[in-house]
Length: 128
Length: 364
Image (cartoon, each protein chain N blue to C red):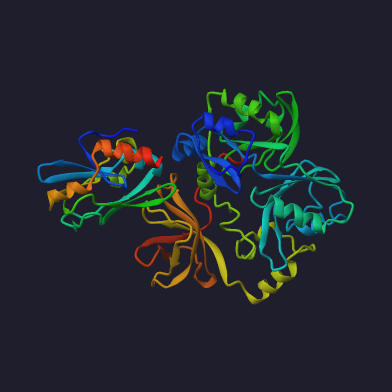
């Protein structure tokens, strides 16, 4: 299962890619594969603010609906509008074109609560 | 996977194809191989194979009225032509559905009945209890493998292997030579496409599976795609739209009920008809890509709770969410605006006829 080395991960299988005080958020390859064909993504609105671990989006697949939690606190800068018409982008490219939202990070120290790629790899091994 | 789950003769074939295996009605079944939407599309545009070996099959012999079979099912069967199939239901005395099934008339006095997997044991007991003592009854479920081949190219794929199947009309069957076996093939299915169901000796079923998969237009499809395909054509699924606590009239199977004959549950149904039904099964389409789910509530336009979703998914055909559900009878009016969801989140939809995909190859 593909894992990107410089991203950070949550136990709910979200990833965040931090660049300075901005983070891009999506769901992991493992998450998209478990969900199966994604048919709808409920996106947050620009300027919405979320606490760490708060639900900020949801995805629906042919099989089930699933909530997405924000890996860190912050304010939405941009959402991936392409997912409105092409939610399957998450299946095709979970770490790149299937990103969900970009947030302005409120507290960089929250990264301590996240897993590195190595931690996440071990975590997956422990649950699969 | 629990060790207690039953396995079809194709279990190893599924695992070798990396299928995702789930529990269904006590069986370990493939829910998907490459992905539900890809398998859905394969079935709608080409042809797919489904392992349906988990379903139950019974054989009975005798005059259907005399042995009591006629009284066990809702549909007229005494007038069935030989080599035809008929859909129907078995009811309890309250008019609830014990199971839905297909009756095959093999000979004038020989019947083959196909029932759901999770209900096979219950059905066998119920039938045997009510058949005239001494009637020949065989449960051949564990001797009978079953592969459904479904899709617009199904005839083209199957006829070179089983010459003559091209003559089968919708809801008829016959016996054909296929890979050295003499087997029953019916022109039936659960997808809304042209297709056949092949009843094959259990231990030889993998040979048939392999042979059919050699064709370039054939791929395997799992229960996930099957559920989506059936929902788009509005077919009921036992445990969702049909169960023991729901009247068959509420489930809307009226055209499979012969009120001219006697059958279990008839008196209750007549009373229900007289007093009026409380609920009815409706179809509905979301105004977005959002999917209804089993257990979601249904709300009126003024947001009063009026019912519950029994099946729901995203329809690739309509590119919208579709669902089936029960609502209070007076609310179930076509084109009426409703919502589905929960207290937190209500998604707009519109009531429609219980069919979402109409131009399939079913009767081609």
